[in-house]
Image (cartoon, rainbow, N blue to C red; front, side):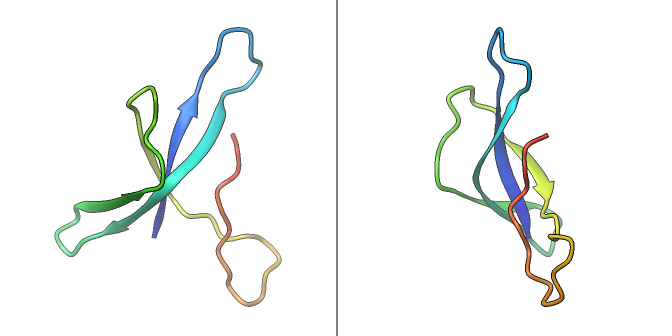
Length: 67
């Protein structure tokens, strides 16, 4: 499973904000199916592998943080 983000860039901000807007699943043919909870205003989506939270023995996956 992958996470889908939009990256918010504003003048005068020190950092960009990564806002999670959905999930993506890889199909057998390598294409992606996206499930979006929101639509980005800037029209750009960024898909990343889901990161596993460190220190969890149950293998629970966490949401991707900001970069």
